[in-house]
Length: 265
Image (cartoon, rainbow, N blue to C red; front, side, top):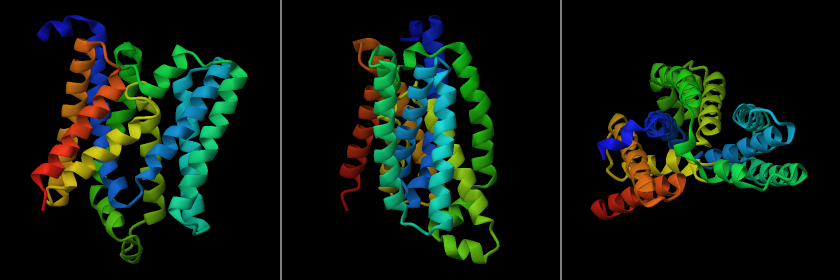
């Protein structure tokens, strides 16, 4: 298997996959504990709008996806925080609305082709060296922020009102978290795909929670599960010519099923 790494595209794939796995699983732990898991799917569909706009205007689809995901994340958090709308209702509105808008824009661009499918389902083996550097340039600061505000995010995830009473800048940190998640999702669509990135952010944490350990151990298990799934998924994808994003998600689903069996009680 080591001969795989004589190919630059495989090195790029593994480097990008490792960073995305770290980012997705680490940030996903806070999202899941806040009962906010649908945010990942919503922002993924919003990022698809950016991809569609990028294809239509012949600009970089990834950066357009970042802009669209950030705009949606900020709007969702604003409506939730200042208009006190139910989180699930706001997410449902954006989920369906962004998907509809993406389909219309793609239709106008006449872009129902293999290029669009790579963003829908992922194409990690086609990630360029430049994209790897971009992922690391954004990913390292994102990991640093998540680590620095670890305790605050943890407190907010369990009780937002008590966190406000304790003097934690909840609104600012909420906007920071959704911004980090939005950027991670937008950068991940070339790796796992728009339709599958939510699974990589949510399922490892759900599987880790089945072991009923402390929060730090749960986050560690989530990261471990995500890293293993990405590595195994890429190897299987290369060996059997399977879609990389779908294979990665099936690996993490297998881990979830194993966690259910091991922790039946």
